[in-house]
Image (tube, rainbow, N blue to C red; front, side):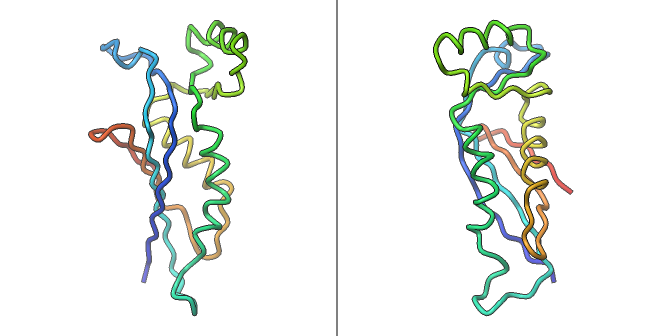
Amino acid sequence: MARTIEKTFRFDAGHRSLGFDYKKEETIHGHTWELKLVLESQLELDGMKTVFDTNELALVVRPVIDELDHSFIIWTEDPIYDDFLKVCELADVADKVYPVDFNPTIEGLVQHIYEQISGKLHLNGCILKRAELRCASTLNASYGI
C-alpha cells in the first residue's frame, strides 16, 4: 500500500512575469510562497512508525529554499535584467538576485523547484511525487510525476 507524506516550506521572494495582457504580472512584486512536497513510499512503517525522518528531507530542501528566500527571481531574457543586476550590484544585494532561464511564472517556478529537489533527494524507498507552489490564497500550481 502506498503512503504519502507531505511537508510544507515557506519563503519570501519577488518576481515579475512577462507576456501577459495585464500589466499586473509585469510589475515588480513579491509573495510569501508556500511549497508543499508530496512524497510517496511503498515501504512498511519501521519500528518508530515512520517511513523516513523528515529532517533528512529538510537537509535537501532547506538549501534550495534558502537560496530563494528574500531573493528576486528574474528571467535572464527579461529586458530589464542587465540594468536590474547593475542596480543590485550598486546596492550590494546582487547575491539575492536569482536568475532563471525561463519566465518566472508560478508554473515555471514549481517545475524548477521540483527538478532542483528531486535530483538531490535520495530517501530510501521514497519518491517525490509532486510539488505544489502557492503564491496567494487563490493561486497555486503543481508539478510532478
